[in-house]
Length: 302
Image 1 (cartoon, one colour):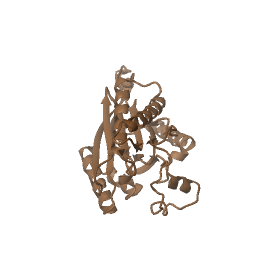
Image 2 (cartoon, helix red, strand yellow):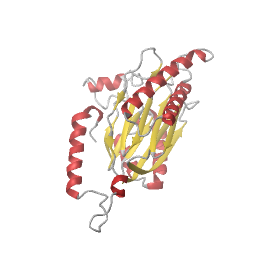
Image 3 (cartoon, rainbow, N blue to C red):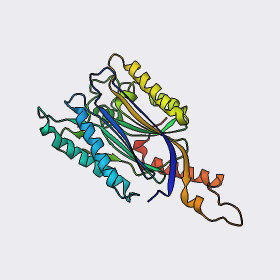
Image 4 (spheres, helix red, strand yellow):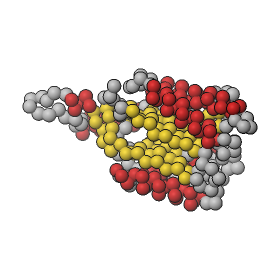
């Protein structure tokens, strides 16, 4: 079934080796009947075969999305179960390797249906939602250093130089215990919004303001160039210790409310596809108040 609200969008991808011997990041853009699933995994460099763990993540997500009934009745549950199944698949894969090992990966998924974005993650790969160049939403890293920052024990400036900045508190694989996942409850998208999924190789050498500013300039086909610019800048800023740099960006070019567009004309006039300015303002205020109330922990001040 086609989504009631459909978006026109532009996709960009980037994946660079950095100063590593192999690229352990994996990403995928899955599209089906107007629905989109974005997937990114950063195989843990401190563990052998991190790339295999990331590949299992992409494989499980692809299989689940391919066979899912659309539209999904419960997108949050779909994302949650997908990551739990990926965790189990990675655990099963480890003993089959030669030599047997315990590969692991971060994970971030984003499902877009009916004009809304739903996401879930484990680890320190991030999802950003930029609006007008500003970071409206940003996932909270599952890391030891992020926990210290949230508890007020260290400043933002001291996060990057902390000796345990790469220590994750949650990830896919590695331990028998199922990871504690973070899943959002859906955010209504607007035209020109940009969703960014990225590994720490991209976000750590840069800051949120740089990411938003460059991506906001990437209108239409220029989005790929904007993402390439950020990936190259991150690699150079981190030289000679650059991690793998991987990212997916999706820009909302236009939103179609198919029910409105298909509504019959009234009094000989076409039905209005967009609400009047007063309704738009009231709805925007409601959305912001709801986001502040429900997702305060996921939001970062620009």
